[in-house]
Length: 333
Length: 150
Image (cartoon, each protein chain N blue to C red):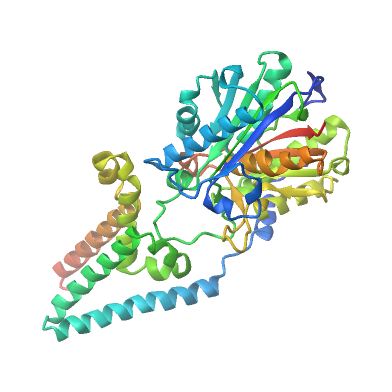
């Protein structure tokens, strides 16, 4: 493991994703990526008493499945990096409470999948962990009640608003057969002054553009060198803005897709600007993308999850929304 | 990356962000809101036919609409109507009922006192505070003016 350029980490032994799993809710099971989920739940409560417990259960299921698919047991995992959107990351702590695995909580808003994956890769590559697990989740109902209004409150969503995914994704890293983590670029916080909490894509687009530019500079590559560049939940507005910002800086990307635009059928499922939430990019990566990389349809991709680092308090105090994006470069064997 | 001021980026964001369909929203709000008012009038006529005075009938209309709104909220239907109706379901008394019942439903998982009891006013609280303040200010103004015979 060594530093490459100013912001990128190059892995020399390249940890592999030994197992991965994606679980989702009903809406996700009705979306275009339904077949890529390992498990979907039609009951939004997952037979639990509260939405929070239901989200915790999503993480338990995703992590357990990923560990099993890696051919490992819980006791083999040296550490688990987990995070979610809820205050004090309770979905992670309560969901993983019974697993008895050394735990490090993470918060990166919707960028958490890339953040936990970066941490797990570094832990494995450095020898700090034999096997490390990355997991994150979101639940539409828990996010709505924490960040917005009660679920049954009758209001209209703006066309720029995004739909928080009820989903979780998990990946187990170690040395062995699997998709390899080649580079990681840790993003810088970028804030271009967006204050509209119903337009998160616009707030996160500058961070995404910056991280991609940093990665391309550090590795001296261009977007065309990769099969696909996936961003995590910029949605329709954010994707347009990121491409415009990149173009202004002399970078054109034609092979871009956004997890928030892939998870749902925007028109049919009424999700406005697309999906969002930690579970959105996590489940698209740990389901759809990694499945394709294992089947050989995709070989060389960039996964960049983006997050909006605000809270309800900061928004009510009129603060703008800082954005973050971390990049993971993945290569099939 | 080239630096950008908040104003420059704001121009970019405005161009990239689709606007709400204002005319459609207005039309739907008019139709749904109008229908609720028509329903209220229908109920008032019905109550008066049953022998209530105009004033009592109006009270019964409010009670009926609040009940219907609370019931539809509890059945998870109200927000689906409001998605299309917008201000049409927000402005009449039905919107106020929905703003009380929806947090009550939502926060019962945190207990009857710390959850339901304290969070019930999370949406309607500001309406009550400023509504009551405005009516007090209005009343005081009328009182002061009346002292001067205006």
